[in-house]
Length: 276
Image (cartoon, rainbow, N blue to C red; front, side, top):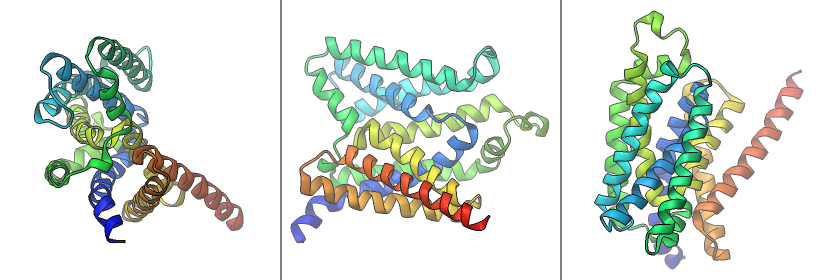
């Protein structure tokens, strides 16, 4: 038992810290109907990290690697903020999908030119949660706390836009500016999360717990409780299964979240039919 705690203790703390803030952001992502913004920003962050590895020889999880990822995310956050206003021919979700495809192609191109690039990409996809250090956890707590505090300060315009995007201009809200702030804050969270957990688990943490909560309630407080419970359960079971089966932690947690979503959908359907 002691060895189990020593091995999985820090990865569990990283999962809870990362999953909690991603789960909260997920409620806004669902309301804004930009479901794939997470995986697109994660792919852009990975391109920045691979480029940093190629150009500056930045190692995985180094501050230089974070800086390269954040620079790429900063540019794309500004693009997304302008896209909804300037590109009217197609939906923002389509623009995000195109961004993901281009970023994925860029990542594959850079991998082919970077020495040891395939190893770097493997870490980006599946993460390195098993090797989480105290430094990683402390850094995550500091970064995510700072982002959470910033979001709290500007929660009113961001929440107002998420709840009703079309009516936001009528209330005097500057959509481009606040959209940029939202995508930038989300991008900062995703950049650090991808370095720790990988693209797969980050996307799962962002979307699935928020979707599970939406099945059962529309009350923000209750949603948050359900999100935290889903994240905690999937993190514990995913870590234990990965440890016992000698499997990658990130994909296993994503599988557990998927199983929770299926269970929640069945329970939600049963409760709805029972009320009728």
